Length: 114
Length: 114
Image (tube, rainbow over all chains, first blue to last red):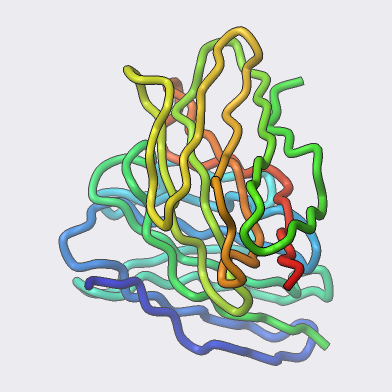
C-alpha cells in the first residue's frame, strides 16, 4: 500500500538553528501539506502546496518557515531559526486532488528544540 | 466563531461495549466531514468521510458516523469496541470555499477497559 514517509522520525536541535524536515509523498499525488501538533494539542494546518507553489498558509507559517519540492519526489519543510515553541510533531500529508479527498499522512517527525 | 468541537477530551469504555464520539461543527455551509484516528506513535489514518448523500456512512474497522444537519453534528459510532481501538480520534472538516486544508477538532482520547 502506498504511504507517505517522513525523515527523520525525531530531530533535536538547538534554538536558533535551521532544520529541514523531509517527506516523500505518494507518487501520483499532486497536493502536499504540512501540519503540526504541539504535545497535547490539536493538529494544526501549516501550509498546502500545489504545482510548485504555496496554495494556502496559516498564520503559524511565518517568514521563518519555507517549503520546497526540490525534485520529483521530496517535499521539505525548513524552519530557518528554530524557537522553543517550534517543538512539536510535524506531519506531512498528500492528496491526489484537493483536501476534500482522502489525505494520507506520514508518521511524523518529532522536533525538539532545546 | 467557526470551529470543530469535540466536547469529550477522554472517554473510557469497556471492551465489547458500544461507543459514540461526539463532533459538532460551526460553519455557514456544511463542510466536508471526516474522522481520523491516530494510534500511539503513528500518523493519522482516515476512518470515514461524508460529502453528500446517505447521512449514515460506513468506514474502516467497523466504524460508522451519522451526519445530522439539524444538529450540525457528525458523531462516530462503533457497536462493539476492541482493545486495539484505543487511540486518539479527530473529527475534521474541509470547507467548500477553501478545499486546500483540513481543520481538525481537538481530539478525543479513547481508552479501553479490559
